[in-house]
Image 1 (tube, one colour):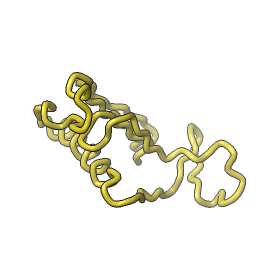
Image 2: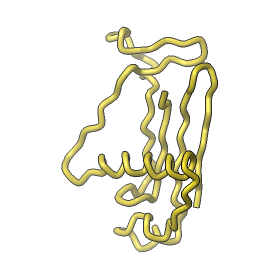
Image 3: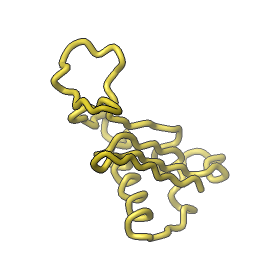
Length: 113
């Protein structure tokens, strides 16, 4: 179960974004949308929406990119994956991180190139 995904300086994602499945601390309504565990509460679903060209697809591509490295062991050249609309982004590192749960075990993987 995906808990969190963080990305920065990847394709159209310049600044850090944090997609997570944690409910807001002040959640008072719609409590049936939350899956309760002993360790942490998690939202049962989430939606990614936004204007055309706002980076929705690149968020999913970033997730798949990290999965390819972790699961398949494929190492890619990040030289072409950085945010290209800012000249200084080429000098910055690309960062992809994920946290997920399988059964009662929690895992965290990340790269910072």
